[in-house]
Length: 560
Image (cartoon, rainbow, N blue to C red):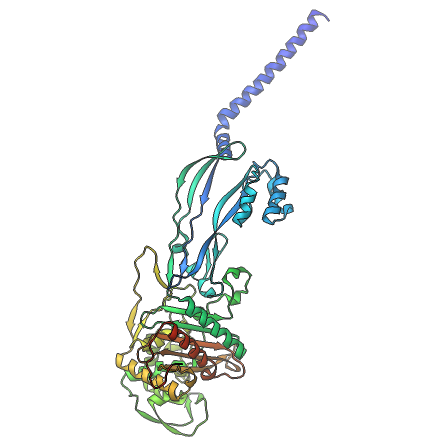
């Protein structure tokens, strides 16, 4: 090889090294000057991670302290695929320990474009601990809560449901979500190259949600649900609803619906069963509504309880003829008898004394046509036509509970007004919230005390000698009213086969402690509220009076 050729090769090699050095220098400048911030952020993200620490959800308890909704400790298992060294092994192990499909897990763990994937949300803590002991790189664990309902079917429609992220989705869980949810915390964890936590920094503590005490009594609630289930079975009914209310405070002791479901299986249950019909659904009240008309004419001093009327078996109102439920001859009845014997003709006769404007004002005064304000989401206001939309026959419908729709809680609150000497008290489900002052329920006078006392006496006659004799409770005076209402048809008019049977009243009538309402939707075999709903009222009342140790007030009828 000549000297000249050797020098040429040396110069070529030097040029190659110089070019390579220039490229590396340019790359270094690019990385350290132009890309420095982005790469620094990426490096930090691989070694630092902000972890959200969920806040414990508040517990819901009944008025006796029995837990109705609690947080159960579970463990969430997750992974960072960028740090998982053996995705197939992790998928097989997690599948075996957690009962998952490894074929579904493997693609997630092998996808290094992801920085976070769940292996299982809210896993069994013991199984998660077994997987943790395997020591897989890139697999993490953190504690969470799973909402659990220890009483299962008791008050399921009232409590509602909190979902996978512990957010309220229905019922009181939804309505009280801000109170129950609390505030999550945050912490920054520092990891080594294998994804193992070596330090925790920047801790912001979580704030647990507040506990809530309800007015519900789980024993009263469970009994009401059992009575409704039996009533639905006996009469092959579509559904049934009950409300048990303390007329002195407005506190709801029970709000029951049948058929029910297990609150722990909320997502797997038909949505039709989720509704709290006592608050969200409306029905035409039928004869239970006659107390509005009678209370109005008494307060307006148009009649007294002993005022009598000669009533034919029917009455013409515009284009409609109103009959009594049972055929009878022309008869003289007092105002008290019109109510106790549930005369449609008598109720319309009294309403005509008022006229539509005054009757409409009394409908509103009792709270119909607007929400009661009970602390439950999705409350219906009912259906009440304003006077300017009344037809000529409306004054023949409304006084007997037709052409108007109410919710069970509205009707129970109206009867609680009579039981509470004429003072309406807002019904409520929340007794108090931990750490917050107790709120006093809204109250307003609807009836003079003397009129409420007169209605009380009349409603006792319904049970002693009228249509509600099957609502009697041995040892106690009972005041109440039956209702039987045909359901309206979508195309107009009323059904001849579908009815709502109801009874609503209070006990002991001399010093009311309980208002109880029972509605039965579409019973078969018989339709009358005094036959279908009144016995359920009596059964609920008998149990509750004994459970609450309410002293008998009718020595002439000894308690069983």
